[in-house]
Length: 242
Length: 63
Image (cartoon, rainbow over all chains, first blue to last red; front, side, top):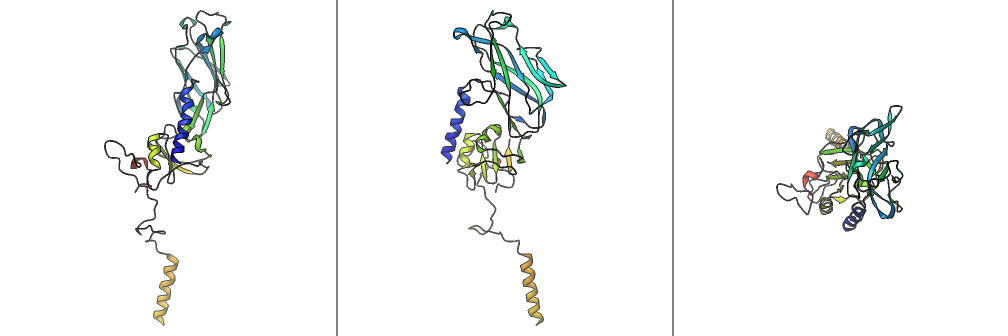
């Protein structure tokens, strides 16, 4: 059982390493916590005419449910010192970061990050997908946008979708050290590695799980302990060490 | 007769109150039925490779 568990973790890890989708280098968010930075990593540009590799000109994100839209603040960066924030009735709906076209490179060789600050709603153990619109332009391309290539990152990372939504996973609000939670919702075993990616270890009774493979390996060797192989149910009491 | 009533009273009280000094299900050593997690003190240096260090075992579960 332990070997099969390790193999499944390895298999699940391979796509994340092999693909170059829009990433979330800020990692797991915490529910009902203000002042969190959410960062998206733009790992590559776009494919242009004739296989040309185009640099990124702009990124626009749409603020989804699960984010307190009144708390959103765009973070200026080298990419765009003055991102454009669109609001509706006091709530931020979109943010757009645009570069100076004069800074575009003639190849797709750069990595960019965009960041905003927000409070995540009280929605632990949920996955919040974001829709991103990425626009690329050839160096010296038409200023009116005739040469632009637009890619919309949306939808699930399945079924061969080449541009899936980046997803922010939400854990319960917690502190360093031991945290005791009573689950308000079920969590499937396959999602433990997503919601507890930054935890050291998770316990339910005498069952344990760790996203760290070295720790996970010794769980099954420890007298009185077994690997947590089932789903977590609503009402379960768990201990998590961060 | 009075002695017999006393013995009966003690027996009834004992049955009602139970005996909390013994574990409900003693293990082989007869000393404790609490789930025992065989972690070890990580100490200094390399962490153990054959069982969990106790600092990864939650409060109340470690020996």
